[in-house]
Length: 204
Image (cartoon, rainbow, N blue to C red; front, side, top):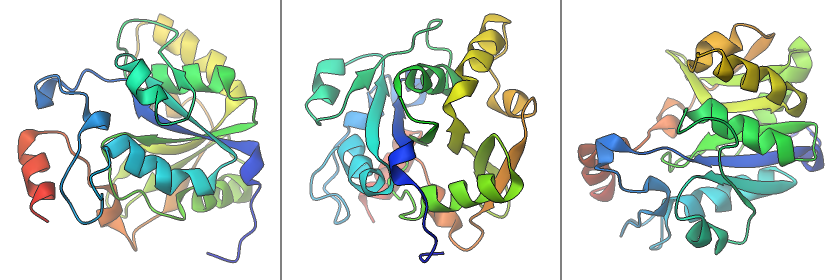
């Protein structure tokens, strides 16, 4: 799909780093550093930013702690504007409020292999289906935080969260959502959730 032209400047990239990371003992996953050939001793957030930045017009980091450290990466840092650690939807809504672009493209801070054509494929899926949201699908399952969303939907997320719901797939079901096929590269969605995942990745 490399020949497709899409409007990067109309899209803000968002790295979602606002979680508590309980399964990692509370470590801030976006700030983990690995002696891995793919990283050159960068933090996860720094590594992901380097992949996502060329795909979008600007970049925002959603974080609820260590905001000064994240700020050293050179991108605006936005905390959740609603609730107390309500999950990725809260981070999405906060970024959408300040994005100043029609779209935001979101990725988690714990997935080191973000596809270099992620945003292009998501945008193509949205435009083809005339959808409000585009979500990556690896051929087996949905990858819900790898998404392209219309920024105007932030109010819908806030209302959803204030109603007591948090499940991202339930919110997606309220809007026209297109799936972007990534069945040719499912391994790109590997994420680091536990110490075992971290050790597996570090040994690669």
